[in-house]
Image 1 (spheres, one colour):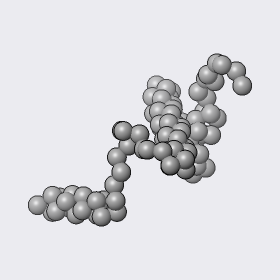
Image 2 (cartoon, helix red, strand yellow):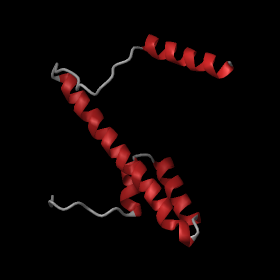
Image 3 (cartoon, helix red, strand yellow):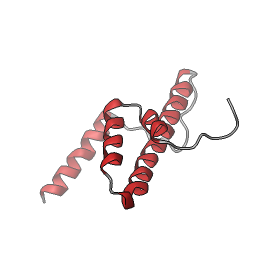
Length: 97
């Protein structure tokens, strides 16, 4: 593998999305974009692809770390199901008010 980073292409964005339905949506939005909006639409999907790859890499690192019995990184926040349910209830109560 070379040390250079491959340029972002529609094909690379779609592959990085990792989901055929999402890739089709990307291509569809690019195909329907007016010429003056084409780069904005592409940039949107490139950003989504970049964040997806970052999330996958972070998940793989966490999995490897957990598998070796290591500590989770300091910026990782661990929640229990009860924590998430309590937060969801708070949000529902706030929205109902």
